Amino acid sequence: IELFQTPAELQAYQGISAQAVVMEGSPGIGSEGGSKAKDGDPTNDDEELGKLAKDIRAIADNLNLKESVSVKVEERGITISLAEAGFFQSGDADVSPEAKKVIDAIIAKAGDTKHPLVIEGHTDNRPVRGGKYDDNWDLSSGRATNVLKYMVQTKAFDQSLLKATAYGESRPVGDNSTEEGRAKNRRVDIVILRQDDGPTIVKPAEGGAKHGAVDKDSEDEDSPKKTDDEE
Image (cartoon, rainbow, N blue to C red):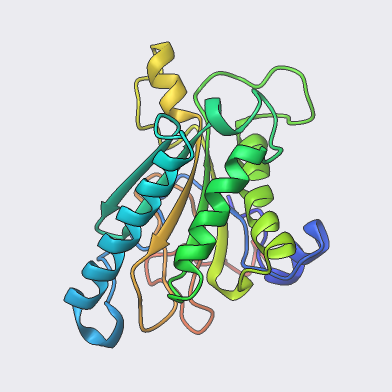
């Protein structure tokens, strides 16, 4: 499900010009086939990301947020997970002062590297009850978008490097049958992607979403094509 097809549509929704917010159940940005390191040298990228991850972990420890922040170096880059319990009220998408401290640290460390960032909203599988969000898609989208808006509007982060994505309950990292597992699933991930020479293409997973974030100059050969009747 693609919530915003173009940056202009997102601008009309949230008052800024930034990358599209996508709600989907397909693989994450940059997960298909990896990406190229800057200057074609994977060693440079690995060293830079390793140092960034170490610095961000140290800052989280200094802020006494070690239990609420997880930092992992993965194939697509660095994934920094902000747990709901430490950074968001239940059923709410407002960015807490504690979350802003971590985001500020990420901006301070990653802002000059020109790595693209993806902000991903996630929830557990329990229905949203009451409040201003209709369902888990809306809640995960609201949290990811609010983090993006804070980075752009308040901290003047380069919006061309940002994208916000909502996954709802579709990408759990814990067992939703337990409270501990559900707590792990209620999170916002800020992913510092590896450098790439061009736009990233998200390919739909089998049985997943029909639309991803597609290079504006090309179209995925596997993507469903509209017929004349559909148009």
